Image (cartoon, rainbow, N blue to C red; front, top):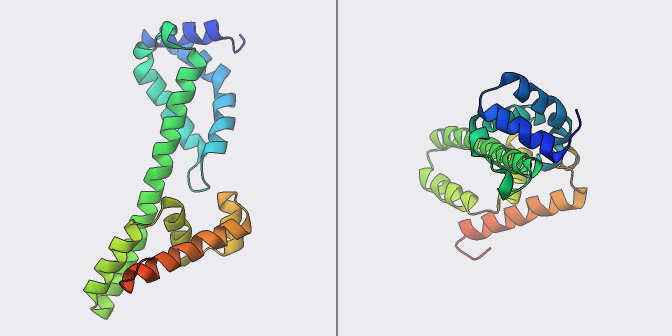
Length: 179
């Protein structure tokens, strides 16, 4: 079988009837393309195979909602995959931030300066996600600028700029001035 729109649509419709063979064929035909695209949408902390597995779970669960007249089968599958990828990246960033805050909470207990920690947490949460992520990875996870640039697939200067802008913003917020 080939990756033709009518073939994919037929396989999704058969999957809606819980046809496991059709679902297996759908996976075999479409997973190489979805895996390749997924790798482009993700940051280094989110494994493509996890996103792919969640994508096909959702395709299985939502196959009965597919409508040929609303668009192509491939576009429907790509939309599901993209949404799963975005959700997973956000979830991973949230988990990393929570791990970082647990470390900060431990520091708060040791120093006894809870007001400063509350202000820091509040200011941190106002940072743009790309800056907060770079700062978290650099200071809490110990990655160098070079390692971050490779992980995030960004130029070194961009990584350094994100960290610098985040630090300037935090400094401004904590000193009572505008960032």
